[in-house]
Image (tube, rainbow, N blue to C red; front, side, top):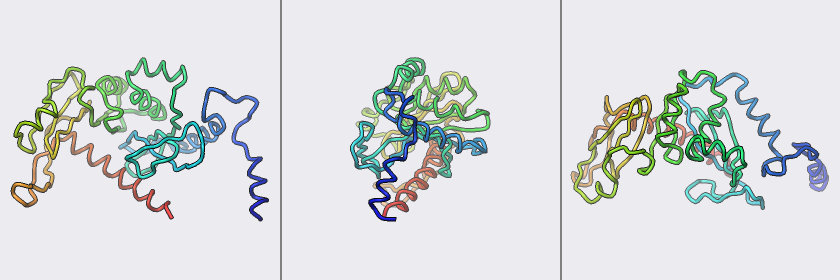
Length: 263
């Protein structure tokens, strides 16, 4: 087949019916295709125990209003997808981020607190048995109301959290911990009901929240000490160790796939 013939055929490939298209949806041209993919992803159910909610970039260098630039991502230009995946990298639901939200999404944001929280609740709609899974996410999504809402629905969740999203948790501020001489491995925590917030001093303060894990039992982590000029073992809280294990496995899978796909 010649190139011109291929381009001619490609012009007539459509993934949506233009007569019934939603003009407010930037992804309307591919929305039926995305829905079809999501149906196929869960045809055997959500069979992994450990799940993660995250974002993933799909490379694209053309012109489109949904195209984004993500400075800290391996793929910097393209479409951003919200993804619910297992630690082995198998996706169960994807959703294209289109920037400014519709009225329906704005309502979800009002109920759940933040955009990140509404994204997590939307991704988890494919999970039929919440108690059979754990969900992990980073500080873009995590806040107290999200963890409380997930606990009410039966989901066990853990995530790193920003200092201004802990809803009154009395923990040391990162600025004060940097100014003071605070020993590495120092851990502070507080709890409200089933929600536990923790601050752990590694190279810098790390804040984490969970609705099913606590600080103990701790785990030994290998770190390099600048003062002693050698590797040492320090105590790491249970929730942070669990977070690092889950997210670390997923990052390894996604990074390897990015490098494999690149020429």
